[in-house]
Image 1: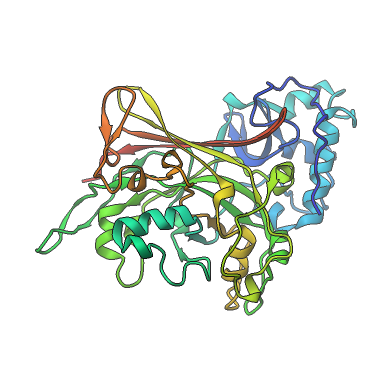
Image 2: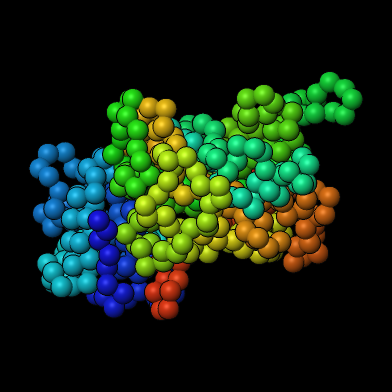
Length: 422
């Protein structure tokens, strides 16, 4: 099913050995330049390969009619499905390695199609149709349960039976580098009425997310093994969270404004094709889930995830190191459950993993866990401490997979906290 590029293949342009974007990756994104419109590209080392330029030159196997790559989103290409994805990926590997010499040997086309990444502005890769965030890390759910419930019964009774999630706001999904204003909200006051004011417990959440390719019909359901074919690719995600606002508002229907103000994602969508060399077993499930959630090919990916917190004085501290492989519920199970009621999927739907925590203290994926709800402030490199985020702080999430000499990365997603708007 997947178009896997041989690990020995090399691009005809120089790519740094530790680049997130070797020819084996070829993630998709949307970019613009001062002298050109917004269009689709793929990352190769420090270059953006202009897919619209290759399409116009007749080098990509795309159908006649409207351009797939001269658009402001990847939605049309994602909707085309797996056969189109495989054909384009195979052609790109040939063109960028030089085994198909038509790009390498055409100096004018190279000048148009290979754009220095520093000359590009990167945009949201998709027009986000809908956004759902799951709660798929057992370590995260357990840590939070111990903070707010009986430590001996940290998980809710339903947690190991279904992938818990909530429907968030597609309208406030923003690209990496977009600054985030501290939200206002109702804040709980012990023994009294709530107050209105700026959130005092602003947090990040270390997550990944995936975009849906072809949608489904209303009333249809997907089995996990069939759901995988609907996944176009993955990004890094920071689901900013107002913990004090959430604590007051979430009963009985779950989070609302506490998570509605911003969700940041990385610009490059890494395909599942690029991640196949890094497949690992997913955690065992006990008890066995109901039949509609059982997988014939249960797996995860060994993706290292890290978080740095930068303070206004310019000093950054590495504060968390986790891994995608820790997730109890897989992406396939998330989609299977999402459609189990007959809920339809749309191209461009964004599905978040939930906070990705691991079994060790440094693998906790948010300040709520790292500081035990503020009780143990985090020491930073410059001598400062943090219980929750302060104005001017910048959060940077990075991710990559590595096996031997092969490295496939996501780049980063970053965002800086601005004061609340008056």
